[in-house]
Length: 525
Image (tube, rainbow, N blue to C red; front, side):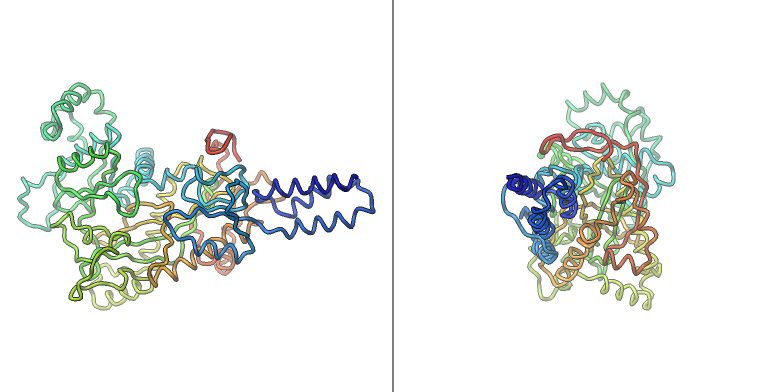
């Protein structure tokens, strides 16, 4: 009778833990402890049950939404995981679109998002946190952010909207009569700009409605001290005062418009209840054969506290389909290099185009080398010692803006950084995507994505025992990574290069879940 009860108890535990990432050996150890008083004649049956638990398949789930998860499914099945399509919240690992869809019930379940992933993955979240990092930083940090991040404002925030209007109006171009098209716009100082009585206030007020004017005049003096207008950025400002307006939460180029007319921009934003961010457009990008492109760089964050960042060693270039010019700001095929935009372009056989509008990193390296030989690369920029190191610094600075209270033991985050080079070949951050597309639509990404996904699971699954100090569970630091040789890094992480390992901060109160999809502040986990 006792054995029957024991077996039922074991089966119940197996069913319960089917959704956690407690190791099978942990469960066996628990059963051994709770059943050590059993009769010796039952020991053989008990060992068979324990062996079944050791060999049970772990469960994975995938929410198939707006992306291709073929590679994820293949990599997990290859590792012995079994897919479940049940609606229960039982799983060992789950891949989904957002935190709310994951249905996490304990910190041991492995999931592809942190609780607050929108703080970096939405355009408004990234803008808010980069601006906050800038405001709280010292001179060196301020200079770095100004160097890598085009100044941006959240239009749904009344103060930021007003700051943007002042920013727009401070750049004067002599009534649009620039004699030399290569001449940069002349900016006025921030101190002069923030003086309520200066003559630029008239220009600002003239761009608003009568009702908005009354509000501005009434509250201006109180709000002036709270306004933050970011310094001009001569390395991106150009000569036409162009700004790009992006929906706060959309992706794939949806809803993005480019303006050099303030009234038209504000009218467009008002149509969407100002749920937009506006960002200074990089008017003089570095081009290849006079065609604009951006760099899609995969980044993996394994932990927010301590902060642990990996950069994929490969990246790829995404080209526009028409040669660059800022004469027509409405031509998306000139300005937006996102593949989801460019795939709709019907190529003219007589027009230049790259195969699938993409280059691999090796193609870009070859181009840079040839450019150096032909003296077209005036700064003699190379990938390894120049651009790659600058991009690493850009990535680290950006992720440091992400609030670390979103840390969750079982979470990781795959990020797609979109990076543009200005005409001096300095990398500039455009945006960060928390669900970078894994569609296998071109030859380049078929190779790139397969290695990235398979090696991602080397980091988050294959070496789990290294991430947690079993002898001292109060030690959350991951300093072991710093001691790895280059070969060990490749053995453990494949093509994911660890570029930053921070220290655990015990003062941070991590967000956790008190019930499904409800966030609360609790102590460190």
